Image (cartoon, rainbow, N blue to C red):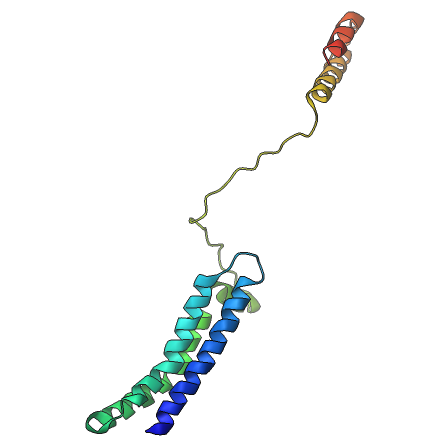
Length: 160
């Protein structure tokens, strides 16, 4: 029975070290930590890898045989569970895998973020804007084949 508990202790230490690396890597990178995704991955790995050994710890005399059968069944499901959690249920992994064989997924609409409109500001000062509008007026008058009035031009530029 001691080897089973030793394996559980070593697994917990390894899981803690892996959790620290995953959390650190989720914080570095894009600037915004993706702790939710890291937590989901850690729970999946912890349940799939640690679950059988927790069952093995309960292989005490009255229920030893059923627990050993459960240990074998759950240990055999580690691979499919990890594949399901870490490949099939991850949108980016699924999109990349299907992209390799030429299938493209439709883009997923993200309803959690609100769309923000961007306001483009003109760095021109008020005087520059008036001068530009006067120039536009002059060009419009010239295109109308009417003689531009010199008085209007002086008045427009005086307001600048």
